[in-house]
Image (cartoon, rainbow, N blue to C red; front, side, top):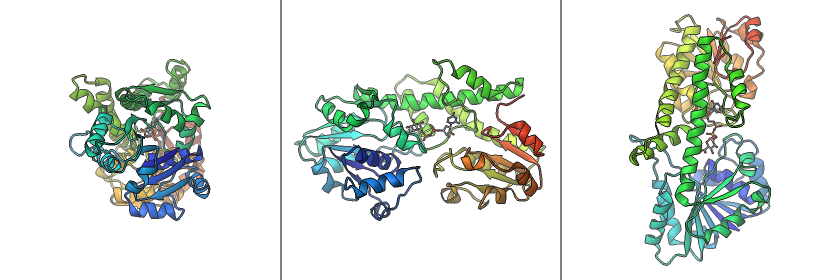
Length: 435
Ligand code: UGA
């Protein structure tokens, strides 16, 4: 198969590299000249474990190339994916689809022979219909079908998620797209991954319904954690106790500072809007969004409480800034709100993150960035762990305590044992461990 991937951002780049690895011939396209130049010279614009090697291997094999020339690549393609960004529109929370529609227009004018155009970007229900309309309007002679194929990969585990998916969902309205999409994913369903064909609107909704459900699951355990603290219970054991019930499942039950990232916050908001506009409001997700927002501020209050209600003029070290480990992505990271709230209360912030500091710098004002966890903690009254990076899981606690002025450790990911932290001389707080 000859495949064009329109948009070489996170999803486009990972999907393009993985599809090339299956043996397809893939061209990744982007409008960003610097990004394409970097990729052409062997660089990788994002941090994702394993991606650099995967790209290098497939470039060398001649199956993966990068270009800015979308119009020149489309005529040879059997399948053209659209994997451009769909940021939340300022003001109303709806997904901004202008990049998707621009791509559709550009693709339409250079179609040659039957081509399947596939939206991989997360797009609201009905976007496939509009893409089809735009292509027909731009090029009435074109032979094409529009399919929806949402992506379920997680940052930090993206390659593994792409190659070993729980399922592949493909929404079609034109049967001619079915054998083409079967061919694209043949290596996967030979591996037993269920390839599920649905209508296009159903497929579009599956993506939002899945992300919103997961966001709700995380939010649920966060609220249970709050209750655990009040009644003297342990949220990790509650999570295990309920998760062993197969109907519930053990994943996405880690209590923490609230969900963040480029997907859950945006997708929950977009689903709320779509549901509201359709006259079928999803109140569980409306509530999820509100609880998650207040959760982040509550985490700052937890830190302040651990410091005897006073952080004014004190130094607080924040360890881990990205919305989760193994990524350099700072979008909607809980650390941003937590730091802001601590600064509002008068704290001076020193921060450290293994991969996210470059992205964090322009997003954070008046923060000192340190070269390591111990450097960040120097002279601090309190240390707060916001992201559970492996590099932060095995800190030498007595050493950490030794460089600090104070003795407060607030662990928002429960990566330390309370008795061990206390033995090192810390006043230790975590989430949902009210024992
Ligand atoms: C999420 C979904 O998990 C993917 O399936 C989906 O493809 C992706 O969005 C997307 O729409 O593109 P991602 O945003 O990379 O993936 O990150 P997750 O691993 O889902 O984590 C999201 C947030 O929830 C993070 O802030 C994480 O710290 C938090 N989380 C997750 C918890 O606090 N507890 C958990 O148990 C799990």
